[in-house]
Length: 155
Image (cartoon, rainbow, N blue to C red):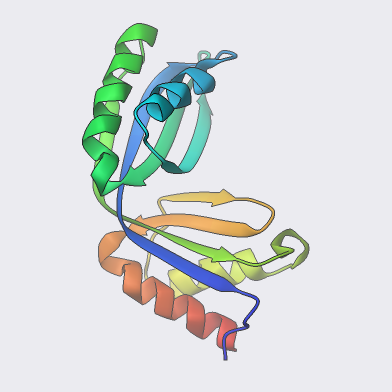
């Protein structure tokens, strides 16, 4: 039986946006997320990756309901800050395993990633916190991913 200490959360109604080549400077993230906040947009996942030349890509996931508002706000940020484009992916899902003290429990990330790999599921993004590991995956694989993770942790 899956440990009652581990929770699996699956959200299939999300859109991923990537704001490309954003200036990598203090306050940039605050500006982006203040803008989204003013429009009552809840961001479910954020990943920033540094690029060469003093820029970064910022990926974020929001619910389907907020997709149009998010795109409109990101276009404003893009224009004001000379970012190099916005990409959007709609066929994604967020899957998270959560456990109190997860950061002190070796092997949970490996187990999650192994379960996805053995099911042929590619991971688009990974984000972690002290108590959770979150992956962005293709939505068509969401239910399979959940079952694979359950099976992995029932061993």
